[in-house]
Image (cartoon, rainbow, N blue to C red; front, top):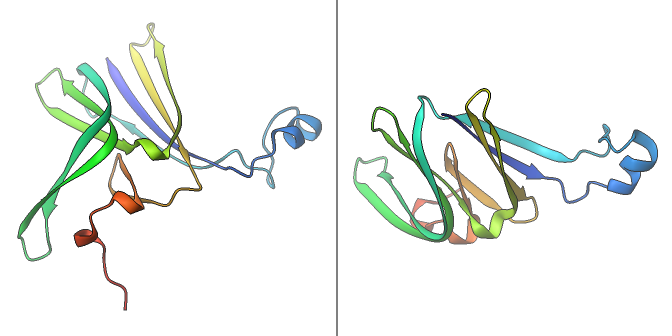
Length: 147
């Protein structure tokens, strides 16, 4: 199957009544429904995927001096994917960021779309593509100091 993930930042100031009254329910230039959307397609066909709620995400990598780091981030929704070639991938979002989720399957094209609608009032960090962590849960050791 082809797997697509959509992370959409919802504009909390979107006025549905204004959209209904003046624009047939559609957004307008001054009344935007979504502030941005990141869309990812898993790079190869997916054999299976699993969504885990209230999970612990392991954020790992290297500091600029090549020293490794690994931090656990709690209360995450994680999508674990396994491709047909056996490659494993993860996408993750803090539960506190989620306004709603949606799954849409198109059996004709063998496409599955996962939608994650994010709250705009909660500050977040985006350390890599497909990972969104509430700023207060982001490891302090990884925050860049600003002069």
